[in-house]
Image (cartoon, rainbow over all chains, first blue to last red; front, side, top):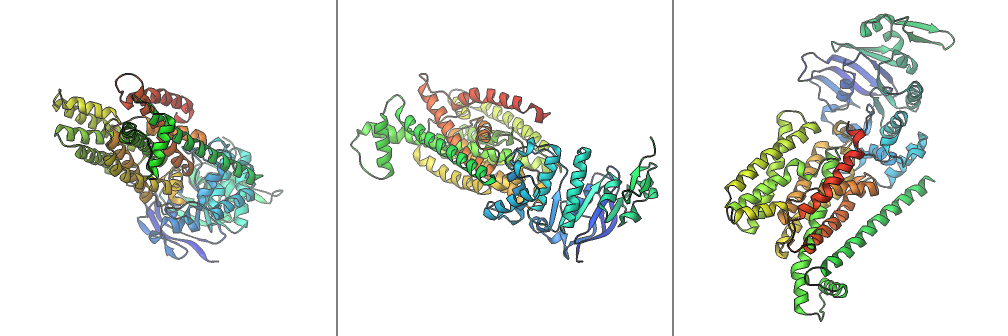
Length: 261
Length: 344
């Protein structure tokens, strides 16, 4: 398996904050990997993703993407390998879902040109792949939260990146939609996309399987197999609460529960 | 089924474009005809036609002079100014992802106004008035966009606030220039100029400014799809692969040249750059690929009609801004009403 992301000793501090948000963070992501990043509010999960997208410049260490330093790559080069699913928010203008998803092709459009037939075909193909063709002509701003999330994911995969970063894809969604989005993420990983998601729910990490990472308030990150990383002890550290992990034979997996309030 | 919906939408958009193109052509003929010296539609079409193709026509010299010397330059000017203001308005709204901003908000218009007033104060010629207006507009934008980078916060809110800061500082400067002006001659001319008017258009000057306006307008049309991408927000646009800094710089420069160029031709005219893009969005949706060219057509038509009104109603000619304000303010209010949910 070839390595996509190689993150070595990366540190990051916001100019206005004293503490290090990321302190000598190390991990690697290979083709087809799934990595769930856990951490409490404000621990820097989104910051980590923004560093991996090249939007924030790291102050120490180095990030390589497919063997090249991220620092030396243009937005366009990064975007052709890395797809990004930001936390859903309402844009100022109600573009149709078709136009919205088509913007995912930006990394192959020249500065003074527009999407052409190929981009239109790719967009139509992704919409039918995600089974959201019926939304094509609806304004994005009028969709439900779950539908918006589907449209953003469609936009992230339309240009066929090799890895997709999800920033809390299940935030603001009801239970059913959370599960549907997780199912979708699992499908994408089975199709061969490498996946990184940040989440507040340890169960999501265990449902997705693969690898997990925990980012603490000091900016340290530990990563490994989900079963090794997500333990009662580590959850107590992260959330300062007594969470229990129980193996349920019927489901063949561990679940995370709160014993009581 | 999918394909037919898309095709249908394409046809609708085409129909809208053609409708406004014909309305604009009709508006031009109408504007040639009406006025204190009436010209018949037949005469006006035959003059325009013969001039366009270098033919001769047997119409009296007086009619020819009124049409070619007075009305045509004025018509051309109002169409160009309306189109330029509307296109730059749409581009600013997209780039600042805020449908409530307009060319005035970056301080372009006030800056240009000060430049022109200064030139009038110094008793310079018309060419210099235009040049000063242009430079003033550019300086104002530079001031407005430099405040966010000075305090290292590039959010839209800070930009809008710095537009307000620069705007009110500039209006003080403008007040000072008016205070210094000779009340009998210069003050009237400054005030009248600031209110906007198409009455002093000369074809030769117009053609020079026209060249300055066409290039940025074409660039905006070429970049229109990228304006869509940038309107998603800086980080999102970058993650999609957009060179945000470069695109934003080009779009702001082009829009500013369009606005300052309009001020050079006709003084400051408010509201057009704000309301026409909204009207366009109701017709063809928010996609700038369709919106920006359509804004050129609708804005041109709107300005032409407003200017034709100002010179035909009443005895004395009314400044254009008075009419655009009367139409614009209630429209803005209605927009706020419609968007009250998303604003909160």
